[in-house]
Length: 415
Image (tube, rainbow, N blue to C red; front, side, top):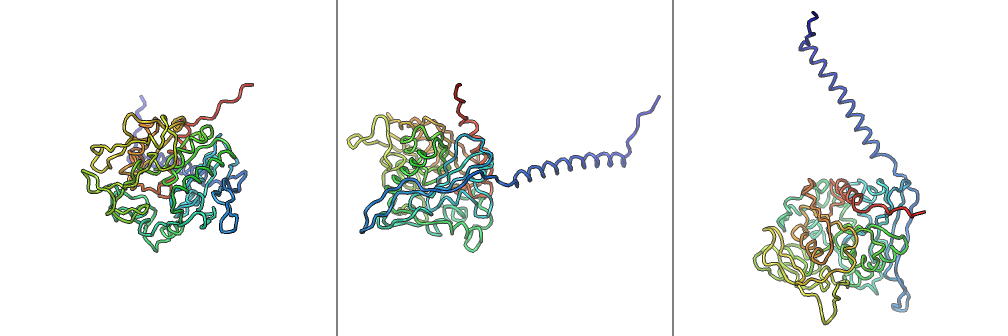
């Protein structure tokens, strides 16, 4: 009878070492494949730029054009997605923030291009490469360096709202003198003081863009979030989905925290809110709930029958604001809910105390919205400028996966 072969300690070590080597070689090959995929040249079939919107007006004996927005576009060689993504930046920024991160990585625009989407990156009216006609647009406002540091890059050091201390995702040291911070702060530009004119002109320009390119996914961030809702109403067949990366809010009254002023309102002059010492309300009212931009409700909003609002008796959490809602029975936003809507919320952002308020207002107004808190899916420590932070690609992938599930390609025409 043949005796079973015994494996000595030396033989066992050799066997384990051999298997480990195979695993390491496999992982090395897999990592190399992933790296090569990430480093593959980005093949662009067509690119360029153009202006949309705008009209000639008489001003001081001249006829300048106003209301136009600059659009940069790229069409990938492998365009596998049927609808392009229109990318609209937030306050104090231009479209450059979608193209590259402050530390030199590819931005969300390239991420979407690599996944088969055509992209159209907008410079808002009177911002960046969209000319500022001071005679018509009037005074401008810029974000101060202190405001930028308190709200975007180093909020954990100021701790002006409860979630600020959770911020961990800004690349490198976010202080003046650091090349990454300086590169980001250099991208900040002034914008119109008059938010009403600015909003109406941008909605008109975005509508003109959709008229030119056809149906599209609209991606908005921060200040530009107020454009998505009325845009869906004026071009209901052309807005296939709205993706909001913390779109502007909260509804009815802006929330005010200590620190640098926002929209000209400081904490001292804001309205105290019963039951909380950390949040106050901007006394100025957003007449259409989400902004002052006219929006269509059913039943209609008129001068004789304006929207009526109430504030929650109690906040939904100790670190959250008391939300404003419509007084019941609530009117419904016309057309906005006729498409998929995604709302992304960052854990440490100064929007964190009120993101749920905007979502709640939309739902009350009849909009079925997917509310994704990034921290709940393992993406922790982000601030409001999530598209520029260390894990920006992981957040872009959340959008890609949501679009794949919620915005299918149109059915082929019957022959």
